[in-house]
Length: 451
Ligand SMILES: Nc1ncnc2c1ncn2[C@@H]1O[C@H](COP(=O)(O)OP(=O)(O)OP(=O)(O)O)[C@@H](O)[C@H]1O
Ligand SMILES: [Mg+2]
Image 1 (cartoon, rainbow, N blue to C red):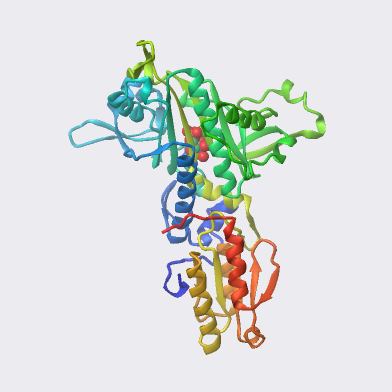
Image 2 (tube, rainbow, N blue to C red):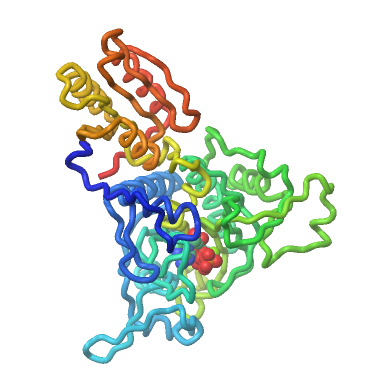
């Protein structure tokens, strides 16, 4: 993409309505524009990041054996009456009447709809285990939408639902989700810590929330500092292996880590004092096992091997895809702007031409632009006729992890500059070597192509 042809409406002034850094930076970098309270348009740069996160989520879900589909945003109230949640859900549910006067709602979550699909088509243990998921917009009429996309009213969520013949099998599905979530967040450059949580209106006994530590997080969290040393890393886990998934669950959940809702002071105080941490965190996902809470009222049953009919055991598993865009920025920025992790960056490299219109500089930029594209990477070329200072400020604000700077002076010596956004360190290299280095950097971050 050439910046002269792109739509990147960066703001010079810091928007006064934004209270936290991710919201400020998303507005300033031209990623989003508020449409109404808690509802945002995703401008091209923001949309690119959102799509990258979606792609990572899809890849990791499919790797775990979960099956993508798509359910609608608008749902009939009838199903929610069957589960009893139409009245229970409260003010957060946006209720709508269609022209026939039928009660509809904009889905805040999809347990009822997926259970209805299941009961219509599945009746035997032979079709299990089954996990279906989708990435779809949700609406919750939050009383205080704030912090930009972090607490919106309309937001993008990945929600998945497992169906199993027994509690034991469903707990394996739960563990499989935990493993796949650990991988997912790490690919996004985040450490998200599974913490024992409260189940809220979804219901159920077993549940963990995934929290990213950040001062601006809305949840208070208590944990054993040893937990932050854990990394999922490059390990391969067999998602069909009950023992392997259980081992990961134990490794990542055996130390104390709880949100304020489930915090237990006496247990916490058993940890050596120097390891006790009280901090704030952003909830970026949650997994639940809730057994037959929905299958019983909705009559979703399966035949077991011995011919008995039993309600299917279920769980649901959410990732806050749009919230994650803000969470990543909260975790990775400095005073000049965003610093995207390589795995989610909207463009892989910024190309800055210090002297637009200079024949040699223009030709060198074109050549680099072409070679970067040929690698399958996505460059953002600042080809505007602007001062160098302005170009650098824009690149720093939008936060691409790498920048190649091209100017007549360097070209005289046959070099361009490759700069890391994170460390600020620069290296002078011949153009081909700079491109080669980018290829190496991104080889370890096979980023799914965005639009
Ligand atoms: N209003 C919102 N705006 C953006 N993302 C949200 C919002 N509500 C929930 N999410 C995201 O969707 C994920 C799954 O939804 P879940 O039902 O667990 O939310 P929740 O526990 O009600 O969230 P919260 O406690 O933050 O209100 C959450 O972990 C969070 O990342
Ligand atoms: Mg939650």
